[in-house]
Amino acid sequence: MPLVAPFRTSFGVETERDVLLVRAATPDGDGWGECVAMSEPLYSPEYADGAADVIARFLAPRLLAAGEVGPLDVARLLEPVRGHRMAKAALETAVLDAWLRARDESFGSYLGAVRDRVPAGVSVGIMDSIPALIDAVAGYLDQGYLRIKLKIEPGWDVEPVRAVRERFGSEVLLQVDANAAYTLADARVLAALDDFDLLLIEQPLAEDDLRQHAELARLLRTPICLDESIESAKDAADALLLGACRIINVKPGRVGGYLEARRIHDLAQAHGAAVWCGGMLETGLGRAANVALAALPGFTLPGDTSASDRYFAQDVTSPFVLEDGHVAVPTGAGLGVEPLPDVLVSLTTSTTWLPA
Ligand code: OSB
Ligand code: MG
Image 1 (tube, rainbow, N blue to C red):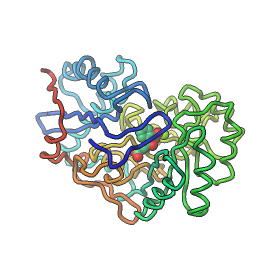
Image 2: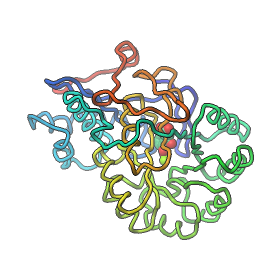
Image 3: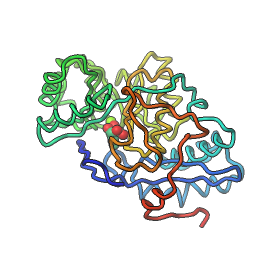
């Protein structure tokens, strides 16, 4: 799917989204799951074609061999296969969606949503110049986004943050995301961000630098939020108890699914830590489930739950729109949205049925 504009992070530039969708065909109806792996293994080790391969070879056969499979069985059946959480999450989501549609229950209701709409933040890529960034942020604020996240990297950090603060004032909810682009040796630059009253700094150091994040946390006033480092509820417990973060970006794909994502929510709530729902440039299918998750009570910060048109001129589902800075939680059964048949056909580059 073409993106409305290139999206640049510290790990690369995306101009299109290569989307892997899983459809679970059951006797009671279909379910959909979106795999959030990107085309290249730059954000994390998974990538879309690799996820399709591991699903076809190792994951789907385990589910198909198990006979009747409910949503609570999927993670246990796939547990022997190491890693590949995004691929597993897509399968679990598809099974859960089919199961919920058959029961006529929505994702939000099943997960424990307590709101009917969620505040929307927007993730703003690295730009070629400060004026271009100011224009982009002005456009998002005009649309009503309630929180701005700036992607940063060495050489694009203090100045863009200063420029956005100076232009738009201290009221704007502002945070930054480094996607692991710094090391502990950069602590002084990162501490310079303390002057700008940021909500948080997301994943400043490498994903396996938990101890270093704890050390960095002692040098910063700005709370550290972890994204890439948290692949499970166990990781979340370790990070919170180590003092490596005070906030967690919960991405269901990264942690193996919505059920594990909810466990992280519950654990963080018990620990008094805030969580928010991250994004991976999802289509309306993944977005629907994310918005439902973001409506849980512990999701106390706006998420990267933008409207569909933040990324896509034509979404796969009817689009999610911004109303008063919020996105509505779907109320229909399962995800509450489904692919528009013509759009799905026009975008599909290949289909594999399992078993073949
Ligand atoms: O680090 O949160 C991230 C997109 C792709 C991969 C990683 C990240 C992101 C974003 C955009 O920041 C989130 C979104 O708007 O979907
Ligand atoms: Mg991030």
